[in-house]
Image 1: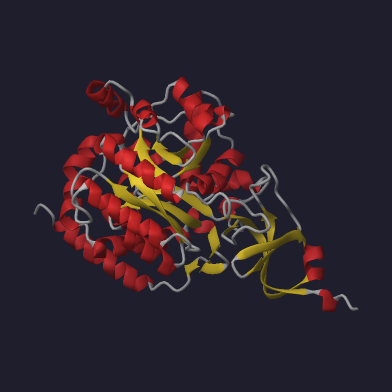
Image 2 (image 1 turned 180 degrees about the horizontal axis):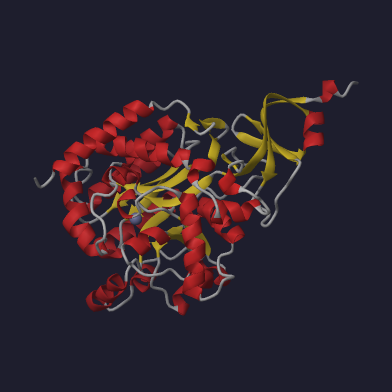
Length: 446
Ligand SMILES: [Zn+2]
């Protein structure tokens, strides 16, 4: 039998200069290629071996590129991209109560969410983000939009005590969450999570109901927790306990909780999160911009807590750039720990990929380049003079990169970005919608 006859057909082989699987950590493969069939990674091996064994429908030779797992944005409010730069340079509660919540009560609608999520998905795909862990009103619209645009997403169905256009009462939020959980139970790209907004906007009863739904469906819970010192001191005044203690009393401190921000942590709270397997979505740029406080990333990692990275919404960042977030996180961790070894480049990349995958409830199928996982891939071009020389591509990805260097992106084996351009997205139409919303939101208060 000839060698040729033994070759297997596959859809795609990518042969990058550097292949960075993330798992195992601290490995950079050269002279290697990755094989994709349909939505999955089916092989990774030496170029020689892959050439011998596969007939590829497409073979991409990328001699100046690094291939990494698709980035996972572990916390965002995609629709709020339409509020980019609407109110800057304000502390959290002023920003929320005087600007964001009034705008939301006036404008949030299915159309607002659809157009905002489309814009956010376009921006994130171009930045190498293949999965977002979202939280907002009209999660049904966000889920449909992400599915239509071929982006993987965990969509958080918000629970909050306030009425909104999406639901009037906590029980209406909860019943809409349950309906969504039922409808997306076996979707390939979309998972629904429960998103109680924050301890200061959700009652004990609502938290208990969220916990019951999480148990029934095995669904992740996303909640802003310990975002600011004021949140913690207000909670102590009002109910005599810190928010983490309250969530623990209500049974929510466990491995299906993704706690967002966590800037105010005492040692015993870090130990509790480690023991229970809580995931933390660290959003350093949002925390810096709102002067919310500093997350003790180094202490969390040393305790064994899974730390993921999120951009938060565009209204408090003001971009959806996880490469930039990695650099900020790595630099800030060193300042907070007073230790240059804190959050080294390899750990920052892990947080932005595998850490995020676990926090978003996809740890079994994305976050690393491993055989059997989904083909969610991001390729970066290091040919430009601002990338040269390259001694260590992981160092470049964290410290010397920019999202414009993202050349190609695949989600579940489907090309979403090729040569720096979005695939199947009408950019002119997106621009038109964003400009129309700028007029409406900008006219507010005039
Ligand atoms: Zn947030």
